[in-house]
Length: 582
Image (cartoon, rainbow, N blue to C red; front, side):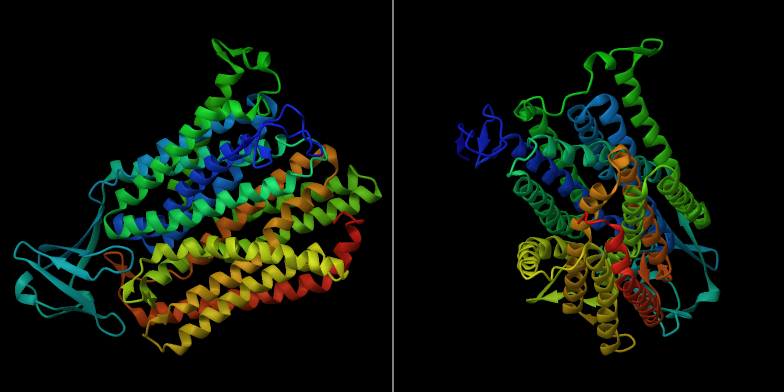
């Protein structure tokens, strides 16, 4: 990289800035820190649902709920991490603390133990059922003291078929009523899983929102480099997501879970090291608002800074309990939380705003809520779509079988390829005064999410009742969802900050992240309805599982498209309420 010391010619840039390629050099530290953070996050994310179902032998339903609770809490806890940074810690300290928690959490995922065991008991004798590979590629096997045999199930999964009965001392055919199953678990490693997920939740909570804030702080008011700086920063996010889905996914499925998770942890170590070594490049732009305030004693020898870090430990404890018991949490409670926050925001709009502010605030509330159907479908990527790709898709490409988690890289790849094209499209349409308004873009994004599922359903139907779906339908659904994301994600945060009254921007952004979290939880609930019966972590009835996927995906596809049409119809009203704040 070439340094350019003289940056005084850049409009809005302080003359003391040291730049690289025309941008503050601190941007590149944030680029690589966030790239490695996203590398670790998405690398682990692609493996997680398979790790839960195949290693710990949780049901697909429970695994989806755990995953949904985990991703929901990742978003919700950014509210706390962001607030503590704004009021006390400053972004630099918050990002450092978050990165440390992430390193511990990701490395903790690599301690897998031997996993849970599924024990079949027949005539008083125990046999172990498992898989001979990971990530949907494994065949079901049964093991006895005598040897090993492949197993399968008949149509309807009423009988277990033993390929080599003499090897294991069993009949060739076992009715499912003739044996019992139980799962033996390793409590230490399951609790280690929950703790690791909680550490990652807290780590992202302290890092994610705050590192973006530092990017903004690098540029002065009116600095013309700001938008391109964020573009460079977000390219780092997608580069990290793209690389990790391939590398961690391949290692985790091909060689073992610990290698995939371990690589994710190593990536986060790189991110933390870069941030610690070069944080002076930030030139004081991310320091605490009041350093002396942090030293004030509030509880015995504990000062405010220590209490902020203890709050992080509190986040870990709460998150661990919630992820651990996610399957016990009534969905109604989550819905009630959403309704209460909605009621509070509407009440504020009518009681705390003048007419213009009220209209804009109500429009902001609409935008915040309009993200829910999109993310609830989009976030099937890590759960039901991942499991579907593992078990019901022909993943052979160029003579090689591609591990299912690698397809998680498609979203990042499509963003890298199509984001510049979409940006140019909006500019061209704006020149001709036909650029869609933000509410219209949101409606189109939700429509694309629903359409993507219907395209996948068409592919499933073409392949018959038990056949594998062609892999290009996975490419298609991710393409549709990515184009939809480019209509929703870049617009949402920007518009909400413009619409909300200045005095409550923080509260409104908190609501955005809260509903993002609720969307992810809803995604887990939807994914749980696609769950099918498994033994040893693998499907027992492919025909029934495929039929259920078709049913659920058809329903959510049409519902999303119906919601999108309604959103399109009311978009002129929302645009008018925005009072020109596009």
